[in-house]
Each structure stands twice: as structure tokens, then as C-alpha cells.
Amino acid sequence: MPVTAIGLSHHLVPLEDLARLSEASTPVIEALDAAGLPGFVLLNTCNRFELYFESEAFHAGLETVLGSVRDALPEPHRNLVNEFEVYAGQAAVQHLLEVASGLDSMVVGEAEIIGQVREALRASDTRASAALHRLFHAALTTAKAVSSETDLGAAGRSIARVGLALVEQRHFPVAGRRALVIGTGSYARVVTATLERLGCADIRVYSPSGRAERFAATHPVQAVPVDELAAAVGSADLLVTCSGGERTTGPVVTAGLLATARQPDAALLPVLDLSLSGDVEPAAQVLVNVDLIDLEEVGAHAPSEQTAAVLAARDLVARGVETYLHLEQGRQATPAVTAIRAHVSQFIEREIETANRRYDAETAAAVAHSLRRVSNALLHTPSLRAAELARTGELADYSHALHTLFGIDIETGVEAQA
Image (cartoon, rainbow, N blue to C red):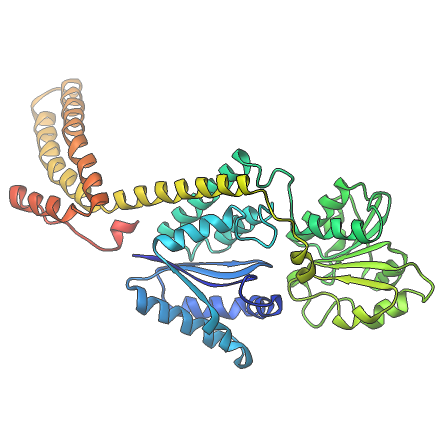
């Protein structure tokens, strides 16, 4: 069954549209569960909202998935489905390998994407088919090769690092400053680690869902009590928000909170909002002592990579695609190989049973070992030949020959994809 990818990224739509899709991820998954697909994986990050799925027929599967996503979205946002890009077959494979390798990110070569791809597969474990598991593992393998063999991600760049570099460019070095981080999810870990590497002396964390104490137990930060957010904002030199799915209603940081917490004569506060759905109320931009930097602005200042590094990464992606397709095409021979081995095995087992009746246990065991070894040796070349013919599209002739010579009928279906 072919693998198809659909979705949107920061290249095509504003981040607020991606936020709307992200907020609907649970009903989208529920709708796809009800559609009865053989398998699917949702990759939902601050840069993209993409679905990878298997279907028995391309057009029917595509219409089913697009219809399920459209029905799961709130009425005002259903037209977003009309903007979805579609990648089928080899194009879907190449797209995922490029995404996992950081070639399609807002910050090219970013460090987080490989973890996000791994997490998407883990979260979809029971929903992902065997073929999708193989595809995502191939993407992760290629991404690791790009990371270790090219200079694409040599600086460990991330959206957080680019955003903090923008803060340092506009205002002051982060080293020695007090930072307040809002959020305790996976991206908060990235932000905290980046602040620590930059020498931030005092990192405090606030959680809209009350998880700050738990986060502080495993990170070099100080938890801010739920009722002390305003005081923490008032004493911070830098505010970074990345709560993601922790909040349930409205922005965590309102313009009113900032105006109250920061006295008119207080130093200007850089506010780096790295949340896709926006943790900071847009009205905060008009406050004279606040500099609000959102994801759109971070993306606009993301550095371009050296051409040589990108070309080297694309070469590794091309090789990864070729290897994946080579192995997958060979797997189409599995039913034929299984059938011929089963056919031969029945004769071998019959002879082993006869030996067990005629000879003592030691002799019978030696006969069984010899027969199975000869059987494996004889079947090795036909098995390799079947895989070669599968890759060249000539497997039908092989199957016809097995039927003509030995009366073997080849079963086809989903087991060929397992």
C-alpha cells in the first residue's frame, strides 16, 4: 500500500493557521481512528502540521483523510484543508527525510526536529502500520547521518537559540541575567538548556498547569508558585514563553499583566514568545517598556546555511530515499519467498519425521540438521532472485513460474507490507 503525506508548514500559511490545526489535533486523530485507515502518524510542530498514512488506494485514501480532517476542524477553519500539500509514494518518503534532517525547518538544520519526529512516531505507535514504522526509522537514521556527517547542525541551532541571539543583538547578553520561562514541556527543556549554555545566572519557571515544581526537580531552575507570576514578571530581565499545550484558555501573559507587573520606569523587558498559538497577548506590542518577539520574527531572522552543507545534507537524504525504496521494493517478494519455503519445508519435515521413527535420537537430530541446512542453501539463491525481480517489476513472472513448475499459489495482500 502506498504511503501518502499531507499537511501544511510555515512555508505556506501563517503560524496562526498552524496553531488552529494544532489545537484540533485530538479531534483530527479521533476522526482518523474512525476512518479505519491501515495506519497513520501525525507530525505536529511549531513549523508544520502533517499526516503520513497508508491506504489501499491513493485517491480514495486521500479523500478519506482530507474529509476526516475537514470534519474535525471548527467550521470557520475547514477551508485550511484546501491548502494542504500532498506528497505520494517516493515524494512522501523524500519529504519526511528532508523534514527529519532539518532541511525544511524555519531554522535550517535545527536541533529539535529529530526529537519531534521520534516523538510523533512514539505517540502514534499503535496507529502506525509496520510500513510507517519502517519509514520513520529510515527518516531518523538519515537525520542522524546528516547531523554527524555535515555542518548543517554543527552549531546546534534551534529556534530558541536564534530567538535568544536576537534578544542579545537588540538588548544585552543573556549571561548573568535573570530569565523567566513560562512552560514545562519539551520545548521548555530546550529553552532552559540554551539559557544555561549562554550563562544565564538565574532561571525561573512558571507553569500554567501547575507543573513547575516537578520541572524544577530535574532542571537547574527555580519554580515560581502559581500565584506569583506577576512578581516574577516584574523582577525578570528576560521573559521566554513556550507553554504550548499547557494552557487551555487565552494567552498566559496579557498586556494588563505586563503593564501591572512592570512599572513605567522599569527597564525595557524583552519578551520572546516561542509558543505556536501565542502565549503573549498581541496588545502587549504597544507597551513602551516591552519588546515582543514572536515566532514570525524569529523565523525572519533565521540565518541561511552554507550552500555546501545543504548540498551535502541533500545528498545524504537522496541516498536515504534510495536505500529505503530498495528495501521496500524487495519486501514485495516476501509472499513468494514464504510460499516456496513453505512448499519445500513440508517435504523436509516429512523426511525428518521418518528419520525420527527409524533412527535413534542422536542420528535423527543429525539428519534433521543436515536436511534443514541443505534446504536453506538451496533456497538462498531463489530468495535473492525474487527480491531482485521485485525491485525491477518482474515478480509476476517469478510467481507464474512457481505456479507452473510446482503448483505454488502466491498469496498477496497486506502481509506483503508487514
